[in-house]
Length: 199
Image: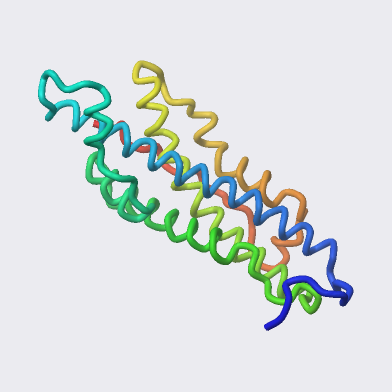
């Protein structure tokens, strides 16, 4: 194991650029998903702290009583415990968490970039696309819950919900054209089902 960059020319510079662009964009979706989960859990915890607080407690007292932020896995577990979730929804969120971990820890891990070959890079992009598909499904659910929190009297934007998986896929992988379809990593075909309204 040596330096991450060296003097050797890259065999696949354009494909590496495409993969690293996809990895960066998928990381943005991943970070946003995790941030939304933590924000929602903070809101729920603040409501609980307020409901159980001393009537003369100040806002600062309430904030100080909030539990510390959790890692994504425990945060999602606690979050789904507060919602009326089907086992299917819990499974989608579990897969989204695993996808987030893959994206964060392996999304751009292609080994020695000067030795990387097209087949290997496209296979890796296929695994990344599969993870992004799972992440987008979970992000779609969390986004719906967040929308209910922020706009409790508004209808969900069905068009956006239905289009979201394809929008994410196009933004992250659109620059690959049909290359990923050819290696058995087609674009997602189905939108996530609507999430239950938070109770």
